[in-house]
Amino acid sequence: MEPIIQTEHLSHIYSAGTPFEHGALVDVDFTAYRGEYLGIIGHTGSGKSTLIQHLNGLLKPTSGRVLYEGQDIWESKERTRETRFHVGLVFQYPEYQLFEETIYKDIAFGPKNMGLDEKEIDRRVREAAQFVGLREELLDKSPFELSGGQKRRVAIAGVIAMEPSVLILDEPTAGLDPVGVEEILGNIRDYHQAKNATIIIVSHSMEEMARTVDRIVVVNDGRIPFSGAPREVFAHGDELEAMGLGVPAMTRVFHRLRAMGVDIDASVYTTEQARDAILARLGRGQTEKGAV
Ligand SMILES: Nc1ncnc2c1ncn2[C@@H]1O[C@H](COP(=O)(O)OP(=O)(O)OP(=O)(O)O)[C@@H](O)[C@H]1O
Ligand SMILES: [Mg+2]
Image 1 (cartoon, rainbow, N blue to C red):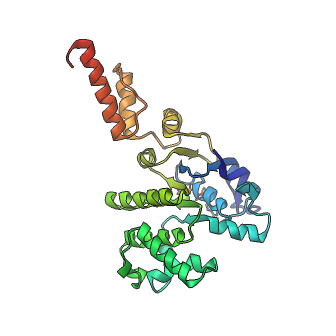
Image 2 (tube, protein in one colour; image 1 turned 180 degrees about the vertical axis):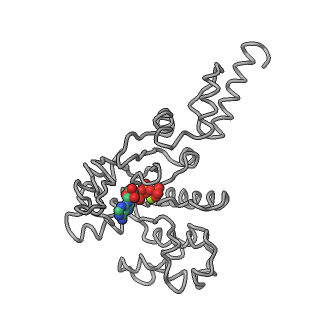
Image 3 (cartoon, rainbow, N blue to C red; image 1 turned 45 degrees about the horizontal axis):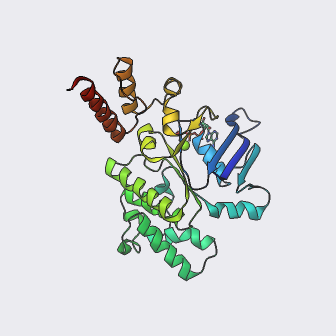
């Protein structure tokens, strides 16, 4: 696997030299690999937003480096600017940052900044709207006429329209109803597949992570204590618990079953895996006893 974004010994201190000085990131080595679907999870205030805002040069490290395709993104002004086009960031509650008079103009804002011609901008706006399931006839409407969930789609489309190689989303499903959550996650998956993009998604929800990402990076108190495939991360149940995170409910049930002496695969974190583990257990029961 080839790294696409890395941080080396990244530290960030807010309000350095004042009584409000706060070390939000401490010596963080982070890697995202090309094409992966990566989740970042951590308690409120652990440093997730601070970390991802460094990945596209929105925040500058207090110390340490941020590399995009092996190059320091702060090496020159041009490099920082370029990085912002390759690494797209959708903020937490991005719907509050819409400001243009039409949805079309809002989505076109990023591509325009990139200096693309009208025809290419138009193509990108329409394609991005399609990715997030916004109908053509909405494009001329004001974003302020939309529901909260729809506004969020416009904001996501605005970043997608820049066709970033790395798409970072800070809690994109926060505050949405279950249907809205599934739709947004589906939109992100479509973008990932269609463009072979790298996705970095911040979430509070272990369940959501378990279902969607290839790898999870855990952030706690400005550090990354561990990362790995969901299965590996959920094996740290006690440590996660201590960070106020916990494992998915399904995993908890299966751990309890094992603790009660039931011979069942406990490395389960989705409903589908639970079904398979139960069926496997029932199958074994049949061959052992002739019946369950
Ligand atoms: N602009 C700022 N000035 C001072 N301190 C800040 C600033 N932004 C964040 N912090 C502090 O830095 C720490 C990390 O904040 P950050 O927003 O990165 O956390 P987070 O993991 O994204 O939290 P949440 O899950 O609530 O979004 C917190 O203690 C926060 O209070
Ligand atoms: Mg945050």
